[in-house]
Amino acid sequence: MKNKEIIIDLLKTVQRTGIEDLISYLENSDFFEAPASTKYHLSEEGGLAKHSLNVYYNLKKMCSANISNDSIILVSLLHDLCKTGFYKKATRNIQNADGKWVAAQTYIVDEDLILGHGEKSVMIIQKYLDLTAEEMLAIRWHMGGFVPKEEQNHVSKVFNQCELAILLHIADLKATYIDERM
Image 1 (tube, rainbow, N blue to C red):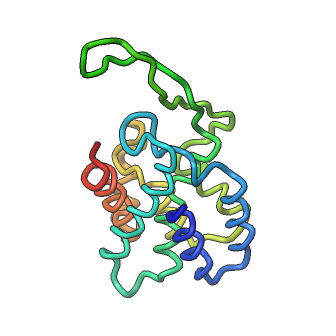
Image 2: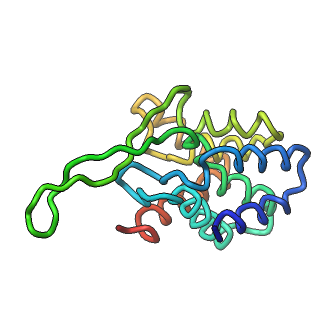
């Protein structure tokens, strides 16, 4: 599994206490097997790892020298950590090219611990290592405008004060809607 090796190798370069424990958590979760979504992008085995790498490559290209490599690696590879243990395989009927209904594998959300998307990722990471305030903001708000209406004004405030947050959002959008088009 090449994506798994690349992600682990990148994480091993991070100079933070607890990174080995975080890597162990990833290896003992479904992070490397899980899809990135149920139907929107990379709804396939290993999709979450592939998406995380796509976000990393996009973010790496956009970041200036004032953003550390550790921050780039952590926020891009772990922004969707909340999706571990989040999906379960299921089947549904779809029409094939001949117009016949056939059973197909799909994924459904089966979340036990409902804490919010970005918030949950930050909480999981913080169990293993400390994040900077900018890293927490970037991960928490990486969904940008795809948040409930009552949080919309917070997005603008965060993006105005945290370059890493807006860049992570853009990298995630590019990965999802351009790089991973189905």
